[in-house]
Length: 118
Image 1 (spheres, rainbow, N blue to C red):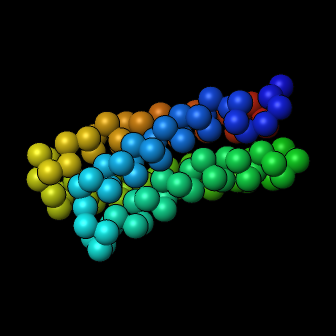
Image 2 (tube, helix red, strand yellow):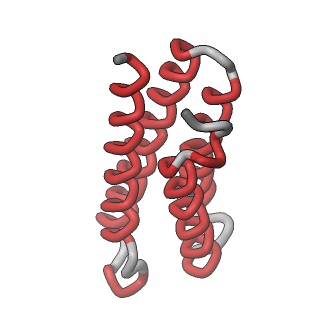
Image 3 (cartoon, rainbow, N blue to C red):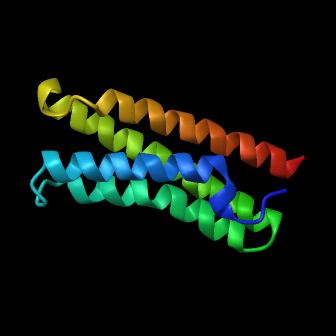
């Protein structure tokens, strides 16, 4: 068993995803772009919910927060897809990579949920 959320691979991968998202948003968009803040907030929500759920101390609470984290992954992918449909690929070349990474994190979260339910 793990000692804390910092040891969870899924938490570390979601933190890497947040760092990538923030870097790209800061270097690509005006802070006033309508999706910039929302994309950043949904990305930050992924590891935050993993951490909060883990610290709640019960599997049912942890699972509930993991589902919220998966929801944030879906929200992030939706916003990235929306962004992709309204921007030229050369303006935001890493969008497909971010979408794939968020899908991978979502699958990892689901795997953790299954293991906690077992």
